[in-house]
Length: 68
Image (tube, rainbow, N blue to C red; front, side, top):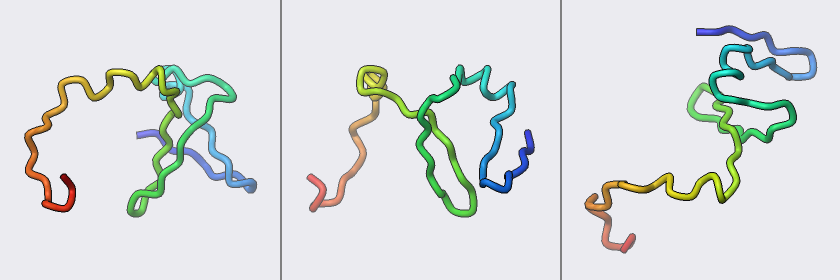
């Protein structure tokens, strides 16, 4: 697990190993989500990049009556 320090301007630097493994680029947009007691950063994706990401999803889950 990597550690980073929050700057006086509330900025963090994403460690190089993580940037390289996720192919992050300078200026790339990120989505930020507060989840419980943690912060998650997710690379923003364009609609064309999202195409097909739900392929093979299991649609047999039981749904509530008002969700049909």
